[in-house]
Length: 145
Image 1 (cartoon, helix red, strand yellow):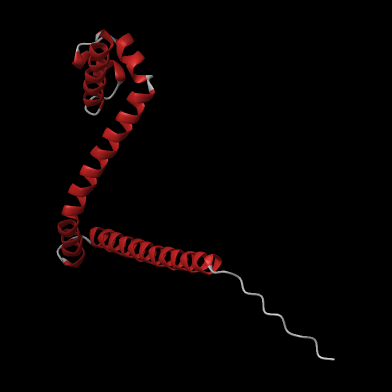
Image 2 (cartoon, helix red, strand yellow):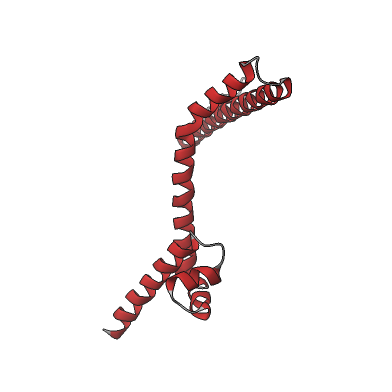
């Protein structure tokens, strides 16, 4: 029963440290915000469980941030286009906005082409696998004499 309590205490400590690390710039500061010693935080951070959970938490945080940025991408595109087209803006500002629009357009086209190529490769791989699974039939032609 003791090991169960220890295990859940360690789990809570990992969770606290991970939450603090997502908000603090260093392990030392994260340890301070949780009230644990630096040595305890360091020991916890060296465990494989911590590393797995911390990576998952960071991925979730990045995914959430990415989703928020994607939601704002339409407004950002509108701002760029307005800046680019506004004759009242300095030429250098308009040129920079135009460069940004062109760069992003080229990048999106490149990504679309890569996606298309990947889909074609995947279809080809599936077709090859399907052909490999078929039984091989050897046709023998009788010799003419």
